[in-house]
Image 1: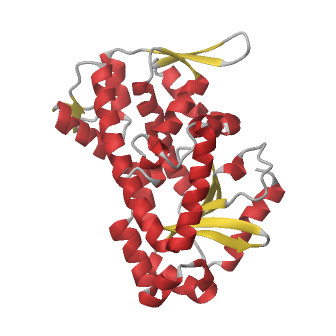
Image 2: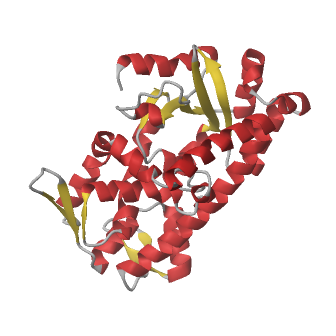
Image 3: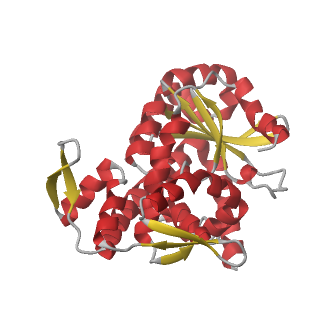
Length: 332
């Protein structure tokens, strides 16, 4: 990300209370994005959201819906995020330095849980796509490597024996949209392709280490086509499928084990591990997809309700209207 854009994106942090983690995501990362009016999207991680919102309400009360500020303040804001939503409070349409920002505030513990365990598969899914980290006091960027490796494995389970590198990124990008209710009426139908095409080099940088690791373990083979595009061939046998499953987050493996059955075995160090029993790669993929679809459906619905409550009626319908206009254009 060029220095001028980075400084522009980082400017909002100067008027907010201190944070432990911050990254930007979305269209600002597209190298060819010329839309100067689009919102700059932040994810902000803090140790104690209620305490942080208390400070921010004193500094930037105009960022919040007035009814929340008057009825319950920081406690209500945090409770709505935790109880109704998925632990994230978003403030959209924040004007600063002639730019418009949207920032989501999350407890860093919850962020880490979602990255490592796909507990709600909301922010964990967001961080499987390119982001630009501005603040990282807790080394979350390094922890996210576990998330990226799991996303690679999940996508490989869903793909056939032969596919292109680009198709792999389409599948990775689509994981967190499976079951998302917004995709039916409030999202661009070509959103996944636009994200990958607009940020292809960033996807390649993010996922190259895992492709090379899997190639070294003979789980897949990489080859160049005549136009220098990477093609991938993977082994679809049971042994490889079991290896891919072993790289998925433990809570997801446990849910798969509940549905498909599991057995105990000893690993190289002599520890007992549980292994999902599968009859075929297709069976494993179908089960995993069903679980992820359910997670995303619940999380997207909860966050949509929390979002409408927290941003207020005017901003809520403004935001939804913008989304639906983009969706309509993509369908027509």
